[in-house]
Length: 423
Image (cartoon, rainbow, N blue to C red; front, side, top):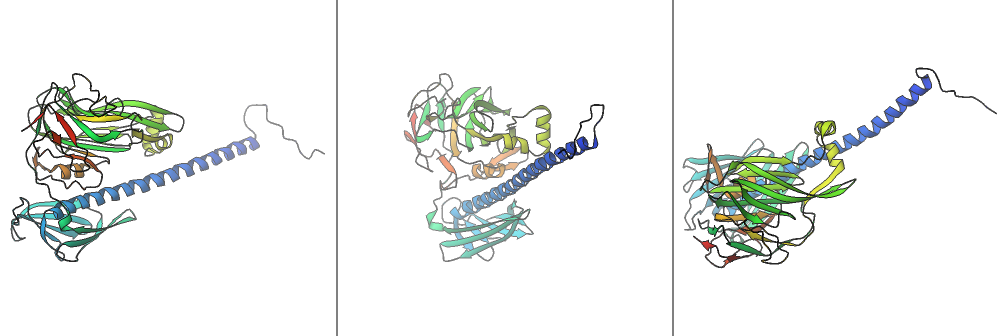
């Protein structure tokens, strides 16, 4: 038995039933897409807030640990550290931490007490809700810091034993490379994989040459920091994992400023998931944000805060998977220690120190770890000594000992010096 019969309209226009069906389908698709976009936005917003909490936590700890390493006395009530900067057991500076609203402020006084003039005032963070020092005994200090941002919170609980931290006095030594065949072969440390998601390199260099490699683990498989036509250039090989496909791509970012003027410069590069930045003397010089989308889709993705690209491009990591060893002053192609090097890419000039991190450093962290204070348009280098125990510090070459071995004070990734000499 036929209860009813639906006949589609063969004339121009739509029937009421057809309109209802179309509207229903559009509503269903809109609801599904809207839920997806909202969910992705919430996740992106959560991760963004967590990233800020992480960055501020690391920056606060970096300041504290730098001061604790040089502390010869501290007051838990006034949050003061009395510092011995030059290692002669006398108080050279007093550092005081204070909280104003949610701003954690660091005051530095010249001399032995806070009655002296303030040398510097620095706002370390603006999301701190409380800070507490608890002096257990003469050598033990417990620190608790609470942070809050956009409804999310973070608690830092650390315990320090003053005598356990080794302070390395900064000295103005350097390793001079002739640009012909001088180099340092890095031992123990290798790259082999396609999942290196973060990287930072900071170095102090001086050169008048237009080209030459500062630090390399093979640009065609991992990365290379170099001078190119007088500018700082970071070459890297990137493994992209997409939902629809995977691919290996070679990328490069080059600074706007030239650094081959014969003056000392602190150069830095950071990489995280396709975002690469170059810093010259503590100032952001160039930035490259990977964008695999173009045209209207790219514009719409930007409008949504990168949600579409986050869905389509899951990871942008460093690495090809090949085994590679590294060099200072030469371009690596080596799959064994002191192996193959590219001809004609040797560095000419001085390298004073180099830090290699397996995490991304913020601009504030780069300035802190390299000892940079911006004074007008120039920078002033202060103490930038590290203990070698900093979180994420993979290699630390302070270049302090005149030897055939370039000692790594972080993880024993020592370098063997071939031809370069200390001065």
